[in-house]
Image (cartoon, rainbow, N blue to C red; front, side):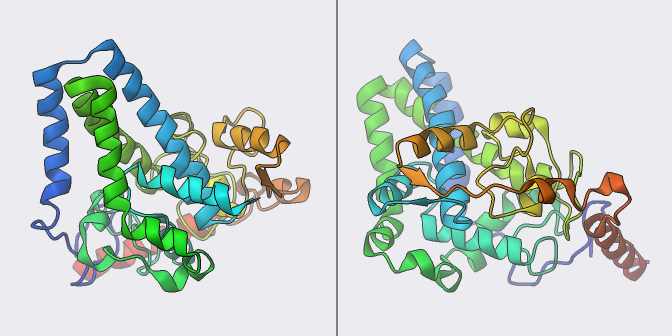
Length: 306
């Protein structure tokens, strides 16, 4: 068992990276860098990069996360499908896979059952778990409420095809530079921008509320992920469509959802009550259960090693 200050749990034998099946993922990074060096960055490709990073991440934050994983608002079936299709264009597998595993994370956050807790290793929480065969398939038992829709199962099954169609579209718009910088490089940045929430936002930042995990609020991650960096807020009230609980906590995902609600495209956005916002604050002397448990687990791991 590792004795790293950030690692406490020894991963089960079935939680290890399959380097062979991970080669396409690793090669994707190489192709992005080499292709960009060879073909350069045209103005069109640069514009595509910006749109493809922050345009697509909205489908992760508003769609995969706040809708499919947490059902923090309601919408119609057509817009639900739109969110799913936009999500698979992000090359993060299908909505059932993404949301199902995320629900599992919240159910077992920062315990041995957590699919990507930093207590199993920082690198594991950031990307290692994705490269593990154990988590390759969607946990349909956790996402039955959406798995019942045939159109979502179709998108899930063909998520790779949708992703490559996105690559073809980028090539048609921006040529080789549009393909390698506009699609490949933007996807790599999008991946790691998303992964930061699982890794950095459980290690770096401040905690406002008592939770059973190590989630933290991180301003920089909130900026790059359209509001997902208010992670302690989110773990405190997971059903909220708003992660930035206060006016100074920038949450562009929630603001766009509010605009959509004006046109009744989305509705019934869940937000925390004033009483909930004022309760269970660590600053008021409440025991920080999550951090206390994490430190206890680390101490136990160190004593076993000793």
